Image (cartoon, rainbow, N blue to C red; front, side, top):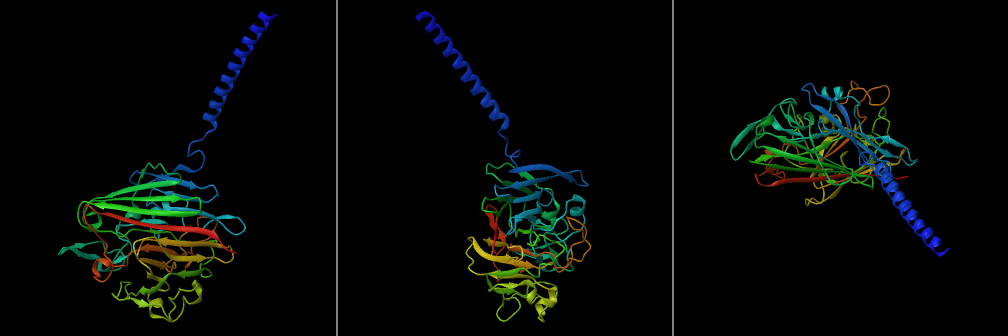
Length: 393
């Protein structure tokens, strides 16, 4: 009996070891099969968005966080095509104007969701000088140069770089010496990161092999209502700025700052966009609304509160923090109903979206009193902006 018992025990142990090993192996195989990659989890999905006329493939990346917030970015122009955030009832809706078709981005459009460079905003007469040498740029906005020229950063296909960080997309583009008239070979990196606190960070970096100018920004049009058939006039705005950069009839800075006190440009306390947008004021008449740079308070090259927008009905709120000295607040004055809505029937009408473009001031290369936009060889251009979304009853 003892011999049989020992034998039985040995067999039992062997069986248990085999079963344990088999279970462990099955478990590991199960984990291997069921443990998805970052893409499979939906943290970052990649799809083909289309092909340019030159045959370049355009990809779309979808970043998602654990709370359901989602942002879509395409490599053509580094454009944000969709940004879904919740309202006070927990409903997720898109809050940026855009298209679902590459062809519409290839056609003329008002820089929907695009990365802007080498120089965001206007440069007077399309000219500037560095060390006594004058450079001539394209005049693509009347007599002025706007947003990088005929083929700025909004119209190129960006390369994608690997990142170890979750929910992070790194785009890069090399602008060769004298591209669009700008000196220096500029290598640019833009990093989009969707965080778990429902903020979207945009980090810009650039280096050059010779002296040049740089002013990068993001040109998303926001409508926090989630209904693009509605205007943004009911949005409540606060901007952390006591002055703006006034402009002449060609939207070029006069070279002086203007106090917002007792003017329709005073958003130091919350006010709706529509409350004074049609007021009798020379600056509003020139731009047919708001299309000006606010001189942000507390500039120190560190992350500073710039502005907040709140849509009372939906409860959606967006706060903007930046290292930049200024922010262009634009109210979609030139949208004219010719571009189709991304969802459903209809078109993007005047003032159906607004922009918070963090940047240096317009025409800075020609304005000695403005903060410098010069980048020397061997230096690194660095800038960061964060769009933080939340809900307020």
